[in-house]
Image (cartoon, rainbow over all chains, first blue to last red; front, top):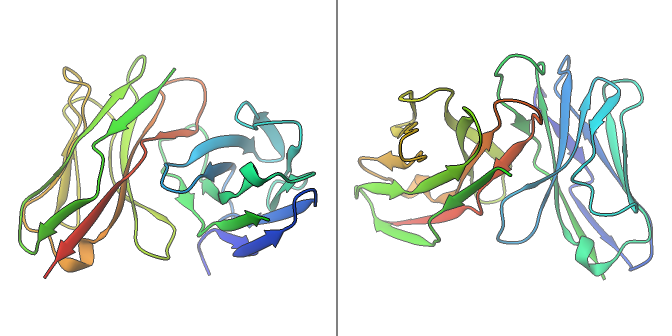
Length: 115
Length: 113
């Protein structure tokens, strides 16, 4: 498919476990964003990549959150020692390039539930 | 910092009614403004956008005009359908610096037949 793909679609983990969420952006898209969407709220920015460079991680809520995009394509968001407040939908978005005003295209998200 | 405020929902309308969802923003400079829609069980989809003052974005019968003087970007549709039932998010992207979107909290629209 031509859209942004995220996996898994649903993830259930026990408190204290580590989780890894995957994002496959649209082919050729330079910019990649991660957002966190709590129930009934709008998405909130976590981190931004331009190719493989993580240019902005100001939205990551704690040092338990880590993201990478080593080859400038697929990205992984890792959450260590999960806590109940990490339960949310994690959205990935990509856009064509950082300079022009191209819109961000979103994946369907990963719904993370921490028990 | 940048922020977006939307009217709270749910908004419940009958089919063919007129829709307005209010959105106001706070940002420095000249942000770009967006409306995204999230249908049940689906991801966020871009509905329309406007990149400068007085621009009107439009798509699928929805319209929104970028009003810098009132810092607003209200979403309107003349005649809603049941299939328009969804959550609508207003968002902005700052003129400089961070390229991420700042979203409002979303407004749920329920259209009854």
